[in-house]
Image 1 (cartoon, chains in turn brown, orange):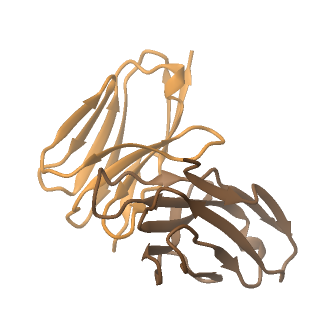
Image 2 (cartoon, chains in turn yellow, red):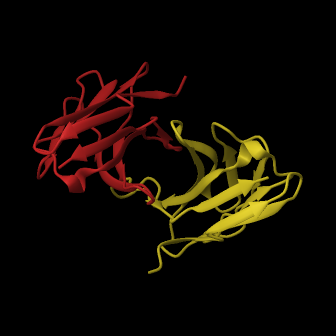
Length: 114
Length: 108
């Protein structure tokens, strides 16, 4: 199993550009989430999904869109990038109500918005 | 609201000293999870606590869940340089909400 994969690893955008961060998992997990990590702020939840076709907002959803058309994929779209969105983005997945509750994280995407 | 407050934000210790990080919530938690993130890495799951007053050990790490299920702690005995990183607690539920983390540095 590849686990949780994220692409790209690094990205530089100009203000106003749009892009999609890709996330995929091959563990058949129901739950998937996107977090951003900024120095001193911990991990803040952007959006999450409890299954295909179901998404909901987290703590900091503004400026981001998500969709979950399949169990495996959970892309994060930045509609119009702003410097405040410079951050490290982590995608994560977990089985749902069964199991230990362990959440598996991808390696992260480091995004810089100029 | 749904936040979990974690203290301290930073902790610097001499190798061999003990270390403790605390996680507090104003509301009752259904469960609490702990993660470790090495510098430059991604968070890795350590444990989940579910029961009131629960204590679990993993080698030199001891995890506690308060009787009221509003607080939790992670204690490391005799720290080693391999313990360096940031330790996060996270409140469970449909969405996992993380505390701000405690960054641990260990001086050899």
